[in-house]
Length: 188
Figure 1 (cartoon, rainbow, N blue to C red):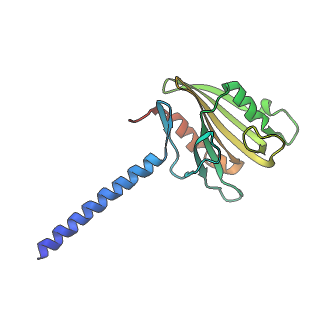
Figure 2: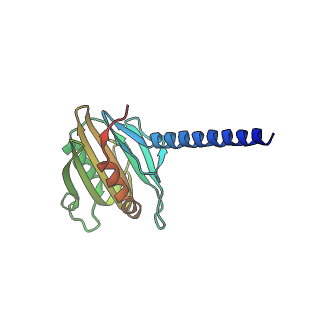
Figure 3: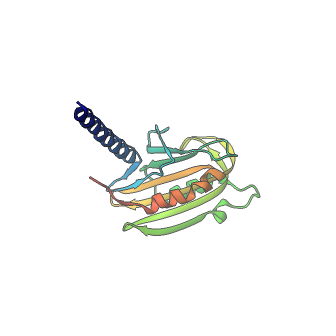
């Protein structure tokens, strides 16, 4: 009888270990973001959300750090428009407190990652928060920051935007950069 209990206990532990491994695999898959024939993996601390827009394929929230009133928002779109058009639109969504030109303050660079051209953008200032292409003014959010990457692939351009209160974005900057630099061919 004692050996039956030990066997049952061992089988239960094996089943739990298999279930835990499956749960970890689902959690990992839930953080995987497909970009055509490529993929990136969202940081562990970010929470997958239902996209707020039909043009957004993936959306995550980065929990607000102490002192910030809102989470950081990360979105992925494959919507049209050129690289320059999108970068210029993003720059236009920010105003500088001292009245200087945001374009002069924005940091824009280009890298090759996994054989793909990736444009990186870093913008700070007062953010005009409104739905994409909506007319009129949105909510003006002071001390905001946006980190963005445009990935050029054979399947088209993918636009990754991460924006929100400056402290929260800065706290997650390394995780964002690691995600972008982790671009790799998609698993099948």
